[in-house]
Length: 70
Image (cartoon, rainbow, N blue to C red; front, top):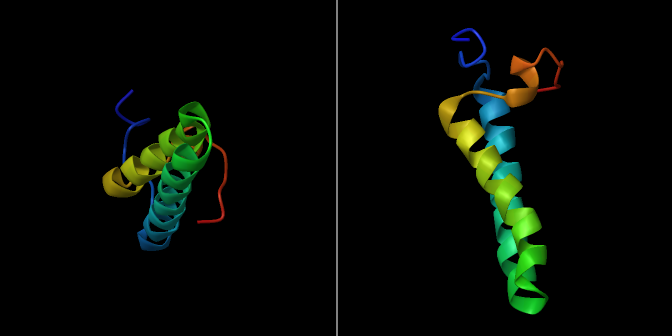
């Protein structure tokens, strides 16, 4: 199990996930203010998860064996 949670992202992957997470978070906040709150939540939750992946240097897809570009 410890092999599954081992950091598996380099600098480029961390930056990509951080940018994607920030964009999703901003979009979710904007959508939640304009439309229903639960629609914004659809963007906020994945955005926060992507930011956590960037901070911890760990990608769930890579941990499952799926190849990613970054």
